[in-house]
Length: 300
Image (cartoon, rainbow, N blue to C red; front, side, top):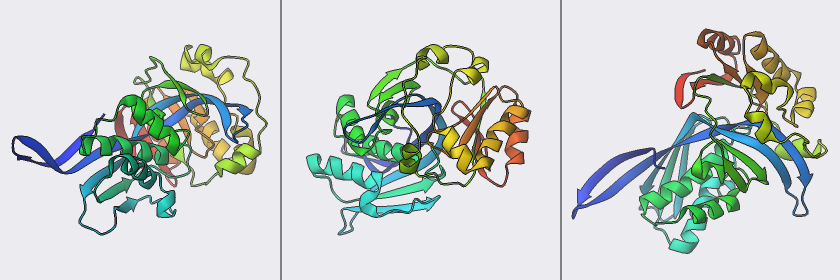
């Protein structure tokens, strides 16, 4: 689970970590259907989550501060109150059970917030993983999943971080052997913030007659007619230039393109690297990332 470790020393034949880091990636939605509004206020969905290595970096250190939890963010900072931050909530959940010492958490943010990529959810879940490894708490996978669900609907996925069909409000995760490593994945974020609550309020849940598992097993070139995102009509009507990103991706050779989450990021799968790079250059005014499976090519 742990992607990186730094600044460790040996003491009494055991490793004592002065600090530890983890790379916190994001996801794209290969299809997203809102099938039902639940009695608890959440919505049931059907989607395929695919992990992408557009990473934030989270570092943990023990702290001598009188504050139990200190958070320092760099880069694409998320503006919110500390007690609303998912990393703080993750620490609070674990601290309640294990009575942790004070810590500092440093986050280098590159994933845009409110972009439909799950960056904040990933940060929260990876903080759980980091705390478990750093303090050697031996929390089981099942317990980590339960903690993650308390943080948010998208969070359990990032504990295992493998391609999966996700249903319910996000708690039912079925990993699938989906490999897109032969494609160059371009993600463009058009600097538009879409309110998730508003997006949900502007769509009518409906049952998806074609099971996503059947569609995802087909070649991505056949996904155009069978895999959709229920949020696109609302977002495209409100922000037409978001739809133009999807259209341009297809016109420059994308095998498949779709908006991720409730927006506003749009991704495209390309077989030709030069076509993907051309498309990324065209949208150079926006933040973007070009990756191949788990390898980052270029960020703009």
